[in-house]
Length: 244
Image (tube, rainbow, N blue to C red; front, top):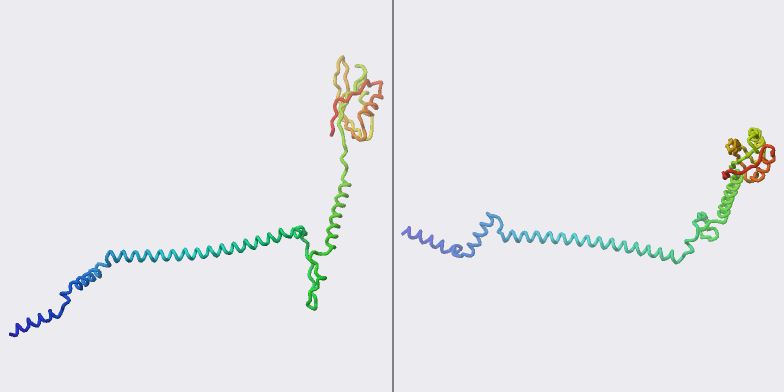
């Protein structure tokens, strides 16, 4: 009798525990157990991956928005600077007379003891004394240059002349002939080298070089002076004439 009573109490306990007869709760408990042992399921991992990707996308979007805001700020500042520049250029174009005003050192502004502004004491463009000083310095430089130029010796035009002096015959003393030629002395005449050049039939001519100042000695007067020695000299010809 007591054994039967024990069996009946066990059945009553099982009858009161209905979890073993609720299959859905059992399956859910089993799934949770295995997930805890083996880690999250594939669906949960995919869901977690999607969540991480969405978070990265949101972070990048926020970064792009911040960068866009910074670019807008820079563009705004550049537009403001450009407008200021255009305004200044427009003002300069409207007042061309101001660009022609020379840069003159402004006279210092005098301080008025009573604190009132006195326009008569302010000279924005300097005084006429500065213009007079600049003019005076310029004139002094011009005068100094003119004085220096006047002291410089003027360039004297000179020429090199090669003369052919011919004797009468082969018996003419050529040494005496050359002596006669060199005896011709003038201001601006300088005799140079000479040599005897055969002409033919034993006759030689004197070829002599000289340098003359063009303003003082001409070929005509030179030939005239040389041919005065008619006992030795038949004729004088200019063989070469070069400006120095």
